[in-house]
Length: 226
Image 1 (cartoon, one colour):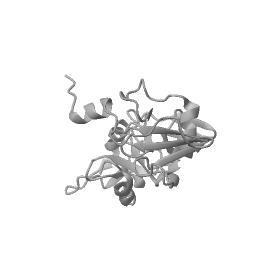
Image 2 (image 1 turned 90 degrees about the vertical axis):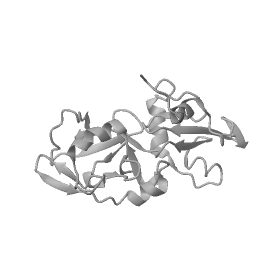
Image 3 (image 1 turned 90 degrees about the horizontal axis):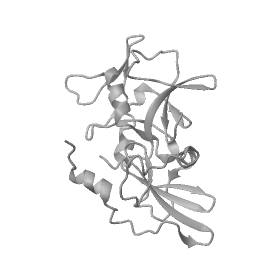
């Protein structure tokens, strides 16, 4: 039986107390303000949407691609504390907050020429060392992506979530969606005294790729979940 936790009830049915803004408000001539929320699955919502689920999330591919490709750190004095990310477009200031991080990697693709192919990790036995892999985020069909580097994977010891290096304009780190993290976990190697994985095993060569954890300070600085 599904059990609603206090956190689930809060996330689904409550508007955050700090949300004193007004969607579409025009604080300056020719400028309107809108406010958004990115959850830990990478879905985008209007921030004041009370029930946040797949049905109420944004699905327009063009809009998602624009927002996630142009989103940056909010270095203005407006809403910076509560909405640390910003997307500016054609007289609209779009302020963004997130459950964890604004970049959430949801799928892995390979690229041959101009062709992108989705990787099914459930049936993947090994990563081909001669193939480039990419982590996609923010939209569908791999339009936005970063090169997958196994050594950049980092599991935070406090929350158990998996992260990877990401676009510099939003802090240089992104969250791996939980379903994708579960699939990648079959390639991890642990040492007896470590709660977090220490290596990524490339089954095609037997090589053990050390996880550098170089992005750990960025996660601690930017994530809302540590």
